[in-house]
Image 1 (cartoon, rainbow, N blue to C red):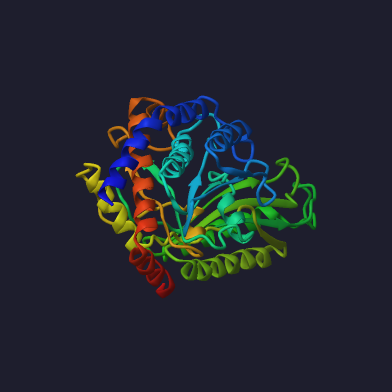
Image 2: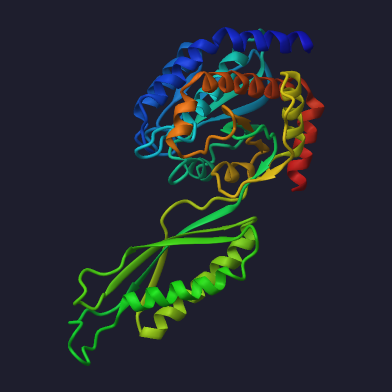
Length: 387
């Protein structure tokens, strides 16, 4: 097994420059969610050149894809998740060009091994920064038959095991009746009054929330003119909690506040989801420990304990249907803040190339452990079923 791991590390090093070229090109041609045609074309062309069968579009999304490579012998089915969407104005300030390239690199490195067991799958999942295509892929049954799923994310430290917060994205609207503002007894129904009362109620509710529970929102429509009673107002909110069960309770309290605010001024209240809902990330501990041991093998000494992110990821939904990990690897000094121009710049520097090579090796080695060790896969499945 050690010989195979050494071969895999050498293979990753041999193909690294071509993988870095993919990341560099995507990084210098940023595309927002569901517009990632350049990135999709680049990644699928590279995979096809290395013998992967390509299916695109996937689950009704033009910039999603499935790339499959079957080994010469039966074995587990390993999925590598690729992201490649950018942020508005600041480009790849979350490092998705590195994420997509690393998943492709790990899959190709494994495909070059002789007598590979099992099947390698690269799933292209667009729009992580907005609606979260992995939720759509889960709902479409794309993960049926997958044994494990993994991806990496650049960040401030090396952490094999992470959890995240569940998220609901809600839009609330109040519908009133327009009237001239200055006419006494104008018979208007002020939808803005309802919205402002709603925010005041939410302020009281937020004081009662736990440490890992949040309600954040903005008013997107507040009226048209100061001399017209607003007949329509709208606001968008992100609700987060450590678990889906906790979040369901918070959402009901949130909606009761909205109903009370509407009733206070005799307005109508409506609500809807404006983005996909995310479940909390449940890293598979057995698989995460395997990842940790491979980090040590690769000479990484600074490895952090399990952490809970204050944000939310669509990989959380994947982790509820298949054993999964979402390790973080330190990019640069670790002090660069994601979603900033500084983070985007370091992701296109030598530091970006360095963490990309580490990620390719880490994902490939961890997948190899699962492929070559039946007991490990059994233990991974046992933990997943127990959860």
